[in-house]
Length: 345
Ligand code: 1CP
Image (cartoon, rainbow, N blue to C red; front, side, top):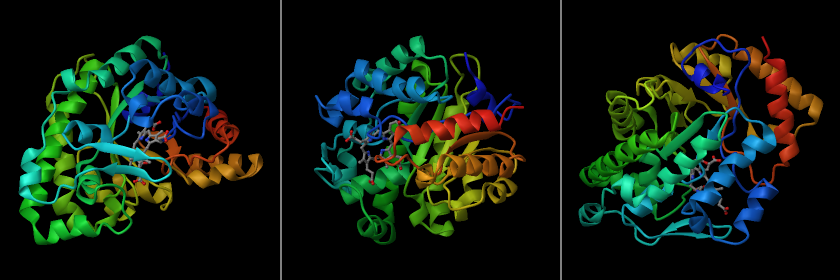
């Protein structure tokens, strides 16, 4: 068992720097496209055997040091009772928006053990196969809320900010419900066998620090505290990674969430981030588009990043956001091999 990833999350010494990639299972891999050819994305997310296959692909093909459950942050929102569609080349669409108290009241808190057993079954099956740790995940409440309020993706988050600033009571009621559902969901993932969990706050960076502290962070903190209050099924604490995309102005606040690992995007030098996060481990932060560099330049970048991260309490090498769907897989392999070679102690 290669447990280097978990050791780095806990700030323990490792013989090399572990590496995985956000969105490592997905469209840039022809093997993923072959699975997806025969069914829709949502059908795939509910088919445990195929989710296992998609999760294993980057582990087998690229040699990453952690697997991340194949699913999507929006599945939980769908199970809360809002019909979801994925339109080809357009992204997710929620058929109702959640913008008033009536809509919030209608949202259900799913029992993940029964209603989302397809996710738990994927986790159980994966744990029998994997030789690297398995990461479970959920969207952070603010990011989940934006999708429900906007009815899908957004560029300026008009409806979300309008709700925050004109009907804060409705906004907070929505956040409380998402938080409660997320706590149950992540606890169940851990019970099923997830060995670390990541909270994806993809849109946190659209909030300034004062609003982040009031409207997003308290719910992340609440989730982490609830996870830490439980006994852990395998006797070892399950590390929590918090990734706030575009969050370099939010680093100190992010640390106060209680996360074990702070994920950073590529917009900040990792050495500067390490100086600011104190006792946490760090995850990141190569620009996903730097994967297009020539082999020589890419290896040099990786070497520089590893050096810049030398003072970290623990470093998990990753991209600064998800791998782009048009990236040639062989470029990802160059990066992963370079991390392993150049970080050997
Ligand atoms: O095959 C397809 O057409 C679907 C493409 C796809 C895939 C492969 C989507 C649609 N989601 C996923 C998988 C996924 N999503 C994973 C799997 C595990 C892995 O990382 O390998 C994870 C962790 C996610 C998380 C996710 N979904 C996030 C957070 C991370 C991030 O990228 O910021 C977000 C925001 C989503 C929403 C989502 N899912 C898919 C789309 C197109 C979107 C919308 C993104 C947007 O609003 O711009």
